[in-house]
View 1 (spheres, rainbow, N blue to C red):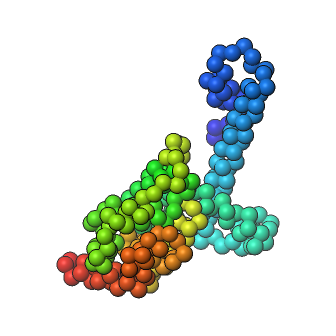
View 2: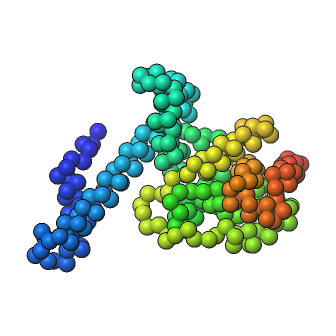
Length: 252
């Protein structure tokens, strides 16, 4: 296993980051330079903290995916079930889509759904969002006109160009970070709801149609509100999804 970075290597990284801002000045001990380095040290510390939380979250997610309960995790670590959940549940929401795929936590999603979620990541970064949100997932669904989700929206006479315009609004500056934004709490809950919707239909997979139902099932989310503003509530979405599934099965 590679050695973890020690203090000298972190100092070297900090010096490399701040060297460009020195301008070749001999005043390396000046107040401004000291404060620049302090700010850079804070940034590196934040990055290490985020990476550590992501590491813990990865293995918590993997343990949960493989059937370990919060009680199992707590017993193994010598703490209560409640303490384990309080301590480790937040770390699960630091994970990116690639992290989740690595843990096996998205084993039920179809290839098309996986592609949709990857596009949602890209939309989140492009729109300057710190996390992937349900609106990015809905926006990504609109990118693929061959999915059952978009067919359901077409059946409901939704103006998808108008819907896209309502969703495609920046939240900040487009991200230049190398790591994809994590799936935030609402997006993780969206995936859980999508699985629940799939099971309701006796499906053993999660498709884009289940994602659409999950979005419509969370009325407090901006994505659901955007659908509702265009006449699509949960009941309308459910009826349309049933219709396109029936049509798909009829054509097979």
